[in-house]
Length: 233
Image (cartoon, rainbow, N blue to C red; front, side, top):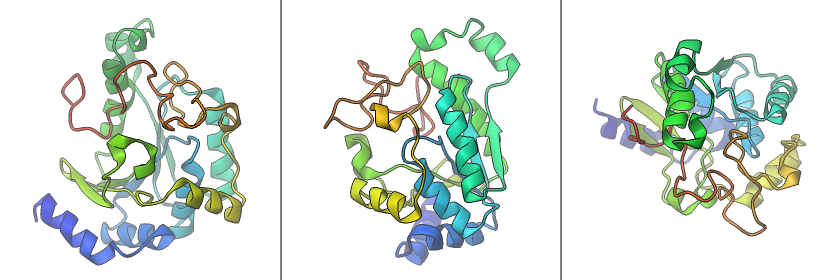
């Protein structure tokens, strides 16, 4: 079955489901060969909670670029314990990757796309090698570039699922409150979309939530949600 047909089939079968029911359904449909890729950022707790409700051993992948905020790593530990997640897989660039591509750790200051490719895209591609699909936390309200985000899509030979695509900020807030979920410690300080400390800034009140990422450039995505970035994958 080609990927377009597979996406259509999944949409017709599960497009009316949401939340933990949707995650449980796609986990079963793909025989467990699907992972949730999480940044453990400002809004991540909701999707992680839904995955834990679907099944505590839902595979969760964190790409540790080596330049994440310390607050993010502590938040990771807090959420994993709080939600009872039992299958966290942390990946990142290898020592060889860095020795060849970013020996002094300053690639981000010269070429954002190449840095993201080296530290995030390549490690994630490796981590997803044994999976048929993956789940993202993207939402349509986050940025104009995500306004048409579908529930199911295909990238290469994998299915991508965006369970929160249609959720707005108010619904996320309701879920945080209903589940009494802890907040990322940087959110209260104006960081609304949190990636690497080298390329994340506070967001001006009322601005696009992702405007603090790669501020002052035309870059809007790290690369894991694009077929091509700077360097061919």
